[in-house]
Amino acid sequence: MIQDVGHAGDRAAECINTLSTTLMSRSPDETYASLVLPYPILRCSGGIGSPNGAQVLHLLGEPRWVLARLREAEIVAERLNDDRRGGRVCVFMTPVQARLGELDEALASGTRALEIARMLGDLELCVLSTSLLEQAHYYRGEYERVVELATTNLAAVPGDRIYDYFGNFAPPGAFDRLWLVHSLVELGRFTQAVKDEAEMIRIAESMQLAVMVSASYWTSGVVRLWEGSWAKARLLLEHGLARARARNVMLVLPPAVAASAWVLAQLGEASEAASRVREDEELLERYATGGHVSNLAWARNMPASGLSRP
Image 1 (cartoon, rainbow, N blue to C red):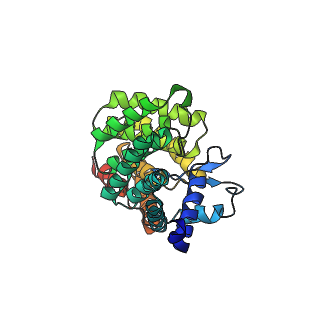
Image 2: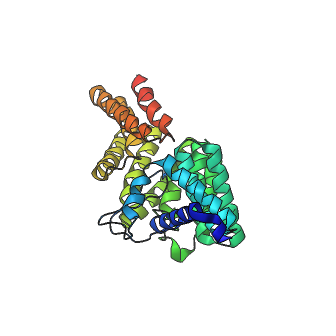
Image 3: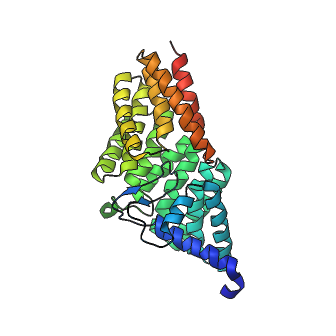
């Protein structure tokens, strides 16, 4: 059967192995991840440690290319009747499809990955699949479902593994709480959001997770923004922006700059707010050029909404 797969299968199988090695790495010294995810990417100083590492990391910046390669890998996994590998392909597809705005497809891929994980009794794949499903549901506006999944996933992590990555670029204690807090805010549950926000920041800071730290402070700023605590929101957002700019975290910058524009407008700093709007428009143009469309409406609409208020 393996011989029948042919050269195309060899290429796809190699792609799976390279992606898996790259994405499942646990302890890089200098790791930056593409957030809100939104799929896991490792960019390590000094190289990834494999001959194809640099090329893979470069190509991971092109979500449509990644999706095409993953589809090839999916065909191979099906021909080999390899459920475990097929599950890993599905779980990697989920955030790529979400990033491209293919939300129904992302939901289907994540659901399939979770089904396979449960069938195999694979805790790591189960936790990772659930984490990435939360992202897909958030983009679909299904906030109650995000809260349900995140709460269940956090409870499923063994007490001696709360700092494990489970194949992601950050532990569930930080990553899942990102989607949980944003969803709780959307549902108006600020008391719970503040509690989970604090734990998210604690884990990100204690593990020195650069991307999660910037994303956590942006998220915390958003909580204060919706509460109307403008001064606190500004402080948190500026801190998150500083961390994001230091590491050029492009997936955090557009929404964080948008949120800061809104806050500055509410504080009466119209000139600075307008400057942030212009900066955000430039960031969004660069971001959209790469094919990343997920959750951009939030970043686009926030400055306009904030500046239009008295």
